[in-house]
Image 1 (cartoon, rainbow, N blue to C red):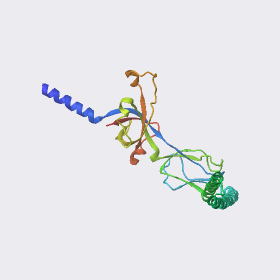
Image 2 (image 1 turned 30 degrees about the vertical axis):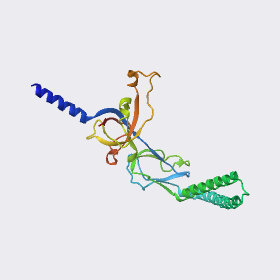
Image 3 (image 1 turned 135 degrees about the horizontal axis):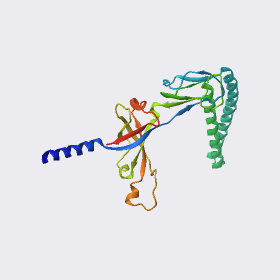
Image 4 (image 1 turned 90 degrees about the vertical axis):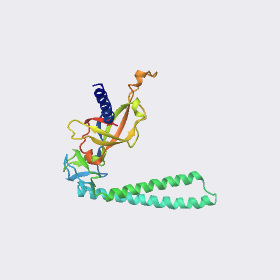
Length: 254
Protein backbone atom coordinates (compact mmCIF):
# COMPACT_ATOMS: atom_id res chain seq x y z
CA UNK A 1 0.00 0.00 0.00
CA UNK A 2 2.84 2.38 0.86
CA UNK A 3 4.54 1.57 -2.42
CA UNK A 4 1.30 2.23 -4.32
CA UNK A 5 0.83 5.57 -2.57
CA UNK A 6 4.42 6.57 -3.31
CA UNK A 7 3.96 5.62 -6.97
CA UNK A 8 0.79 7.73 -7.21
CA UNK A 9 2.55 10.73 -5.69
CA UNK A 10 5.39 10.41 -8.20
CA UNK A 11 2.93 10.16 -11.10
CA UNK A 12 0.98 13.21 -9.90
CA UNK A 13 4.17 15.21 -9.55
CA UNK A 14 5.22 14.25 -13.06
CA UNK A 15 1.83 15.22 -14.47
CA UNK A 16 1.98 18.58 -12.74
CA UNK A 17 5.44 19.22 -14.12
CA UNK A 18 4.41 18.40 -17.70
CA UNK A 19 1.26 20.51 -17.40
CA UNK A 20 3.31 23.59 -16.71
CA UNK A 21 2.26 26.78 -14.95
CA UNK A 22 -0.89 28.63 -15.96
CA UNK A 23 -1.27 32.43 -16.15
CA UNK A 24 -4.24 34.65 -16.93
CA UNK A 25 -4.35 36.81 -20.02
CA UNK A 26 -6.45 37.94 -22.96
CA UNK A 27 -6.35 38.33 -26.74
CA UNK A 28 -5.29 41.69 -28.17
CA UNK A 29 -5.85 42.90 -31.74
CA UNK A 30 -3.83 45.39 -33.81
CA UNK A 31 -6.24 46.96 -36.29
CA UNK A 32 -5.50 48.60 -39.63
CA UNK A 33 -7.64 51.60 -40.59
CA UNK A 34 -7.86 51.87 -44.37
CA UNK A 35 -8.17 55.37 -45.82
CA UNK A 36 -7.44 57.25 -49.03
CA UNK A 37 -4.98 60.17 -49.30
CA UNK A 38 -7.59 61.87 -51.45
CA UNK A 39 -11.08 62.96 -50.42
CA UNK A 40 -14.26 62.38 -52.40
CA UNK A 41 -17.62 60.65 -52.50
CA UNK A 42 -17.43 56.93 -51.76
CA UNK A 43 -18.39 55.31 -55.05
CA UNK A 44 -17.94 51.59 -54.38
CA UNK A 45 -17.56 49.56 -51.19
CA UNK A 46 -16.55 45.99 -51.95
CA UNK A 47 -16.56 44.54 -48.44
CA UNK A 48 -18.98 44.22 -45.54
CA UNK A 49 -18.49 43.91 -41.82
CA UNK A 50 -17.48 40.35 -40.94
CA UNK A 51 -16.00 39.60 -44.39
CA UNK A 52 -12.58 37.97 -44.75
CA UNK A 53 -11.32 39.49 -48.02
CA UNK A 54 -8.14 38.20 -49.63
CA UNK A 55 -4.96 40.24 -49.65
CA UNK A 56 -4.79 42.49 -52.72
CA UNK A 57 -8.55 42.59 -53.35
CA UNK A 58 -10.22 45.96 -53.81
CA UNK A 59 -11.65 47.47 -50.62
CA UNK A 60 -13.27 50.66 -51.91
CA UNK A 61 -12.97 53.44 -54.49
CA UNK A 62 -13.88 57.11 -54.51
CA UNK A 63 -15.86 58.96 -57.14
CA UNK A 64 -14.04 59.24 -60.47
CA UNK A 65 -15.05 62.89 -60.97
CA UNK A 66 -13.66 63.95 -57.61
CA UNK A 67 -10.53 61.88 -58.15
CA UNK A 68 -9.89 63.45 -61.55
CA UNK A 69 -10.03 66.97 -60.12
CA UNK A 70 -7.76 66.04 -57.24
CA UNK A 71 -5.34 64.25 -59.55
CA UNK A 72 -4.93 67.44 -61.54
CA UNK A 73 -3.96 69.28 -58.36
CA UNK A 74 -1.61 66.45 -57.36
CA UNK A 75 0.05 66.51 -60.78
CA UNK A 76 0.71 70.24 -60.40
CA UNK A 77 2.23 69.63 -56.97
CA UNK A 78 4.31 66.81 -58.41
CA UNK A 79 5.71 69.02 -61.17
CA UNK A 80 6.68 71.66 -58.59
CA UNK A 81 8.28 69.01 -56.34
CA UNK A 82 10.25 67.54 -59.27
CA UNK A 83 11.49 71.04 -60.20
CA UNK A 84 12.60 71.59 -56.60
CA UNK A 85 14.38 68.23 -56.57
CA UNK A 86 16.15 69.01 -59.87
CA UNK A 87 17.28 72.43 -58.64
CA UNK A 88 18.46 71.00 -55.26
CA UNK A 89 20.41 68.27 -57.07
CA UNK A 90 22.18 70.80 -59.31
CA UNK A 91 22.97 73.06 -56.34
CA UNK A 92 24.34 70.14 -54.36
CA UNK A 93 26.54 69.04 -57.25
CA UNK A 94 27.98 72.56 -57.53
CA UNK A 95 28.50 72.70 -53.77
CA UNK A 96 30.39 69.39 -53.79
CA UNK A 97 32.68 70.72 -56.53
CA UNK A 98 33.42 73.81 -54.43
CA UNK A 99 33.99 71.64 -51.36
CA UNK A 100 36.70 69.69 -53.17
CA UNK A 101 38.48 73.01 -53.73
CA UNK A 102 37.88 74.09 -50.11
CA UNK A 103 35.58 76.95 -51.17
CA UNK A 104 32.37 75.65 -49.53
CA UNK A 105 31.18 75.34 -45.93
CA UNK A 106 30.07 72.03 -44.46
CA UNK A 107 26.86 73.59 -43.09
CA UNK A 108 25.78 74.71 -46.57
CA UNK A 109 26.37 71.19 -47.93
CA UNK A 110 24.29 69.66 -45.14
CA UNK A 111 21.51 72.16 -45.82
CA UNK A 112 21.40 71.22 -49.49
CA UNK A 113 21.45 67.50 -48.65
CA UNK A 114 18.44 68.01 -46.38
CA UNK A 115 16.60 70.02 -49.06
CA UNK A 116 17.23 67.32 -51.65
CA UNK A 117 16.06 64.55 -49.31
CA UNK A 118 12.84 66.41 -48.48
CA UNK A 119 12.10 67.09 -52.14
CA UNK A 120 12.75 63.45 -53.06
CA UNK A 121 10.41 62.26 -50.30
CA UNK A 122 7.67 64.62 -51.48
CA UNK A 123 8.03 63.37 -55.04
CA UNK A 124 7.69 59.75 -53.88
CA UNK A 125 4.55 60.52 -51.84
CA UNK A 126 2.86 62.43 -54.66
CA UNK A 127 3.64 59.72 -57.22
CA UNK A 128 2.19 57.10 -54.89
CA UNK A 129 -0.99 59.12 -54.40
CA UNK A 130 -1.43 59.48 -58.15
CA UNK A 131 -1.00 55.78 -58.83
CA UNK A 132 -3.39 54.67 -56.03
CA UNK A 133 -6.73 54.88 -57.85
CA UNK A 134 -8.38 52.47 -55.39
CA UNK A 135 -7.57 51.16 -51.93
CA UNK A 136 -6.70 47.47 -51.66
CA UNK A 137 -6.77 45.04 -48.76
CA UNK A 138 -3.17 44.98 -47.44
CA UNK A 139 -3.40 41.66 -45.55
CA UNK A 140 -5.65 38.67 -45.07
CA UNK A 141 -8.02 39.45 -42.21
CA UNK A 142 -11.50 40.32 -40.99
CA UNK A 143 -13.39 43.55 -41.68
CA UNK A 144 -14.57 44.64 -38.24
CA UNK A 145 -16.16 48.04 -38.88
CA UNK A 146 -17.46 50.18 -41.76
CA UNK A 147 -17.42 53.95 -41.21
CA UNK A 148 -18.80 55.26 -44.54
CA UNK A 149 -21.34 54.05 -47.05
CA UNK A 150 -21.48 54.61 -50.83
CA UNK A 151 -22.61 58.14 -51.61
CA UNK A 152 -21.13 59.70 -48.48
CA UNK A 153 -18.30 62.23 -48.59
CA UNK A 154 -15.00 60.89 -47.26
CA UNK A 155 -12.43 63.50 -46.14
CA UNK A 156 -8.78 62.88 -47.11
CA UNK A 157 -7.06 60.46 -44.75
CA UNK A 158 -10.29 59.51 -42.95
CA UNK A 159 -10.65 55.71 -42.42
CA UNK A 160 -13.42 54.08 -44.42
CA UNK A 161 -13.12 50.70 -42.72
CA UNK A 162 -11.09 48.85 -40.10
CA UNK A 163 -9.38 45.53 -40.75
CA UNK A 164 -8.02 43.05 -38.22
CA UNK A 165 -5.30 40.99 -39.98
CA UNK A 166 -5.06 37.37 -38.95
CA UNK A 167 -1.38 37.80 -38.10
CA UNK A 168 -2.08 40.82 -35.86
CA UNK A 169 -3.92 38.93 -33.12
CA UNK A 170 -1.76 38.59 -30.04
CA UNK A 171 -1.92 36.73 -26.75
CA UNK A 172 -1.13 39.04 -23.83
CA UNK A 173 -0.62 37.60 -20.36
CA UNK A 174 1.06 38.49 -17.08
CA UNK A 175 3.64 36.57 -15.08
CA UNK A 176 5.12 37.19 -11.61
CA UNK A 177 8.67 38.46 -11.18
CA UNK A 178 9.75 35.02 -9.97
CA UNK A 179 9.12 33.49 -13.42
CA UNK A 180 9.89 36.34 -15.85
CA UNK A 181 13.63 35.58 -15.91
CA UNK A 182 12.93 32.05 -17.17
CA UNK A 183 11.06 33.26 -20.27
CA UNK A 184 12.66 34.26 -23.56
CA UNK A 185 11.69 35.38 -27.05
CA UNK A 186 10.93 32.43 -29.30
CA UNK A 187 9.58 30.29 -26.47
CA UNK A 188 6.32 28.47 -27.31
CA UNK A 189 3.35 28.63 -24.94
CA UNK A 190 -0.21 27.34 -25.17
CA UNK A 191 -3.35 29.48 -24.82
CA UNK A 192 -6.66 27.92 -23.88
CA UNK A 193 -10.10 29.50 -23.67
CA UNK A 194 -13.68 28.60 -22.87
CA UNK A 195 -15.10 26.84 -25.89
CA UNK A 196 -11.72 26.26 -27.56
CA UNK A 197 -11.58 22.71 -28.88
CA UNK A 198 -7.81 22.61 -28.41
CA UNK A 199 -5.11 24.94 -27.06
CA UNK A 200 -3.57 27.44 -29.47
CA UNK A 201 0.21 27.47 -29.76
CA UNK A 202 1.82 30.92 -29.58
CA UNK A 203 5.40 32.17 -29.69
CA UNK A 204 6.66 34.79 -27.24
CA UNK A 205 8.05 37.86 -29.00
CA UNK A 206 7.86 40.52 -26.26
CA UNK A 207 8.65 40.64 -22.54
CA UNK A 208 8.14 43.93 -20.71
CA UNK A 209 11.24 45.52 -19.27
CA UNK A 210 9.32 47.02 -16.33
CA UNK A 211 6.65 45.74 -13.97
CA UNK A 212 3.03 46.62 -14.60
CA UNK A 213 2.39 47.15 -10.89
CA UNK A 214 4.94 48.81 -8.60
CA UNK A 215 4.66 48.31 -4.82
CA UNK A 216 6.38 50.63 -2.29
CA UNK A 217 10.04 51.49 -2.86
CA UNK A 218 11.30 49.19 -0.09
CA UNK A 219 10.69 45.71 -1.45
CA UNK A 220 9.91 42.94 0.99
CA UNK A 221 9.50 39.35 -0.08
CA UNK A 222 5.73 39.78 0.04
CA UNK A 223 5.73 42.92 -2.08
CA UNK A 224 7.96 41.33 -4.72
CA UNK A 225 5.29 38.68 -5.21
CA UNK A 226 2.90 41.45 -6.33
CA UNK A 227 5.12 42.43 -9.28
CA UNK A 228 3.79 41.24 -12.64
CA UNK A 229 5.34 41.60 -16.08
CA UNK A 230 3.48 41.77 -19.38
CA UNK A 231 4.37 39.12 -21.94
CA UNK A 232 3.05 38.95 -25.50
CA UNK A 233 3.02 36.01 -27.90
CA UNK A 234 2.04 35.56 -31.55
CA UNK A 235 -0.36 32.67 -32.23
CA UNK A 236 0.27 30.31 -35.10
CA UNK A 237 -1.26 31.59 -38.40
CA UNK A 238 -3.60 28.63 -38.79
CA UNK A 239 -5.09 29.20 -35.31
CA UNK A 240 -5.01 33.01 -35.06
CA UNK A 241 -8.51 33.52 -36.54
CA UNK A 242 -9.99 31.44 -33.70
CA UNK A 243 -8.96 34.06 -31.13
CA UNK A 244 -11.25 37.04 -30.73
CA UNK A 245 -9.88 40.30 -29.25
CA UNK A 246 -10.83 40.66 -25.61
CA UNK A 247 -11.26 36.91 -25.14
CA UNK A 248 -9.90 35.76 -21.75
CA UNK A 249 -7.30 33.01 -22.04
CA UNK A 250 -5.26 30.80 -19.77
CA UNK A 251 -1.65 30.57 -20.91
CA UNK A 252 0.40 27.50 -20.04
CA UNK A 253 4.16 27.98 -19.81
CA UNK A 254 6.04 24.70 -19.88
